[in-house]
Image (cartoon, rainbow over all chains, first blue to last red; front, top):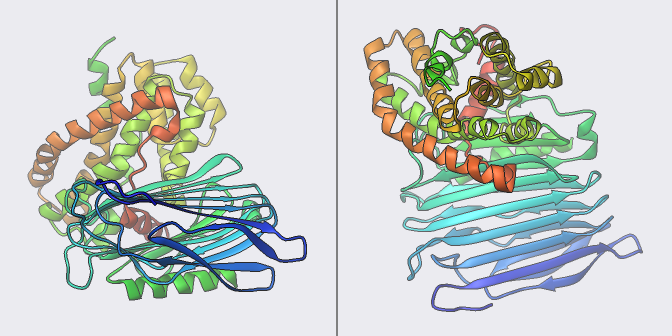
Length: 255
Length: 224
């Protein structure tokens, strides 16, 4: 971690590999400053890791990066201990949070962190880039909550890019909060909803048997992407209702 | 080139099938999110800054000579809703027919052969503009304008909204249309150098969700 006047720069890294005995080893598990990675008890062939925020933030000017490299045949499940809260910093300027995930062939990653909450006055740009092999598997959840209870949100921009075998299957950006391009809270984009989330599921068998597009209640949908992936998109009045919809969707997709 | 070709291409009477699509307005009206001129304006503004920006940049990139197959793939990746992918390809196929009749071109012929079910509409729009001798900025404007003119005229039919009010919405959005066309053109120039990852990918969750809800209705006035 380095902390020049401009903000905190921190990069946490992990590498997961098949340990050759039916389990998953973590030869690299590097925490950095506010980003702490802790191995917890796994189950079966799967290793489990918790991302624990050791400080508040990201704050304006901070730049956090998390990199996970899931090698051939390895299986990892990541969760986080608490929601991440973007806060205004003492320095002007946006904060950045980059997540880079690679999953090699026959690897599997469940990336299920807690919500990202955009507090009033904050300005955060989140980028999640995922590179998968043709036979990799993924479950990834992203939830964004605009403002703490009763609070106006900060500015939040997020980009989610999924590549499978080198081909871009999903590239999506969402910008909201004060200063975001016009209409972000209007009837085409969020219409007053304060929680928005996605569940991205990639399985090689979706190439031949894609999911059927369907509504999940009034304000969520599951769709097949143009590739071996399914995407759940949901908006909700708050974080709790959003999680309920995404949990139900995950249960349906896993059934 | 003839600048007047832009008027032909952008004319609502150009027989490219756009009148059958509401750009998400029908779903938003049914959900009670568009109820009059103010909410229509807010809807159109949101669509312009998301789907409109992406379409505008795709169209401008096609004029600059970026490989239309790569642009079509990029459009797929930026359109998670299969209902919207289908609508974009249908509109692309109809525009292709009208464009080939208006401005015959080997590039349009090649794209039609490669995508018999239609390429994404903004990609076809860009190649049509190129065939008509127009510039990237013209295609950028055309795509950006279409992203708001469709919902606006559809809402006149859906809500019996006063056509003067609907036109007022479009007029008030004009300065933002200028900015979107500028941004799209800037992105398209980067695409020509750096590849399709430089395309914007702004998304609108309720447009995606609404499109899937709409596609499941047994009876509807508009195709999308």
